[in-house]
Image (cartoon, rainbow, N blue to C red; front, side):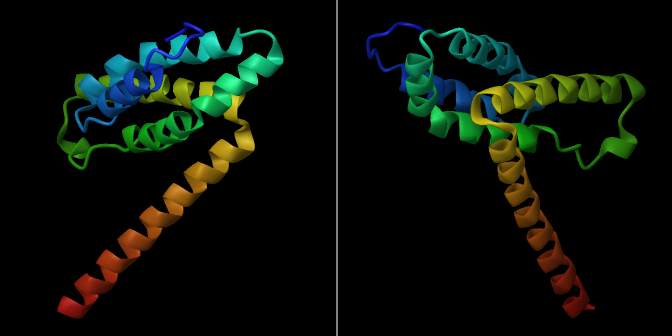
Length: 139
C-alpha cells in the first residue's frame, strides 16, 4: 500500500473497508489497526504536496471509513440484556473507533468529518421519524 507505484492499492484498501463494514463488531474492529497504520503512513508522507496527492487519491475510502466508523459506534439493540463484560468490550471497541475518527479528522479536516457525521445522523433521524409515523398510523 505504501509503495509509490500503482499496484492496485485502492482495491486493497476497499477490501479492508468492506471488512470494516461487517456488522459483527468483533470482526470489524480487527481492521482498526490497519486504519491506524494507514493514516499514520499518510501523515508521515513528504513532501506535503505528495502527501496531499495521496490523501486526495484515497479520499473516497477515507470518507467511507468515517461512515463505517459512525455505524460501528452504534450500540446493539439488545444492550440492556448483555452481560457487563460484553458491555465493557463494546465500550472499549467504541473508544478504538473514536480514535479512528480522530485520525480521519487529521487527514480530512474536522469540519468535513463532522459534516459527514451530521449528515448521517440527520438521515438516521429521518428514518426513525418515518418509523414512528408508520407505527402511529397502524395504531
